[in-house]
Image (cartoon, rainbow, N blue to C red; front, side):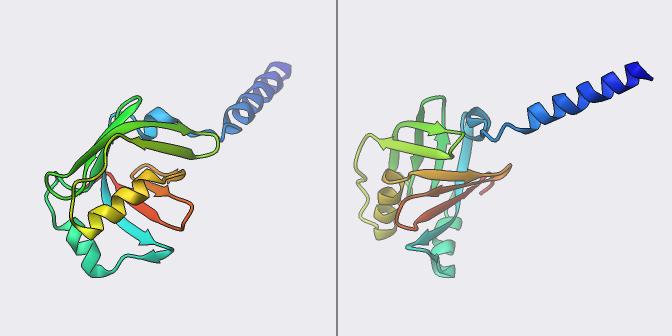
Length: 146
């Protein structure tokens, strides 16, 4: 009986120690993953149906971002790419994207997206979504599928 009680106590202690980790696994969320645009909110207002159709009806070469261990690359509208370096803090869900070049796009939507990406400060994530936030109530919602 004493052995069972000891094993139970060890199991509870092990569970308590592993359950207390509130830090995100940055590699699992970001590295070697491609995220496709799934939604956007500008100044706290969700995008219109027309805007959602604009980026969802494009091919898979548009409106995505792919992360590697310390760099990222992606595309806005067809042929308009961006890249840079990034770092994240999994404990506080903070992220910074350091874009290497200005966007060459003439589309207003691309320019807005680029501006938001360049000012991202935090994120939220789940198994199949990633939300990127700036300090102006702008949110880019990304998903794993086009």
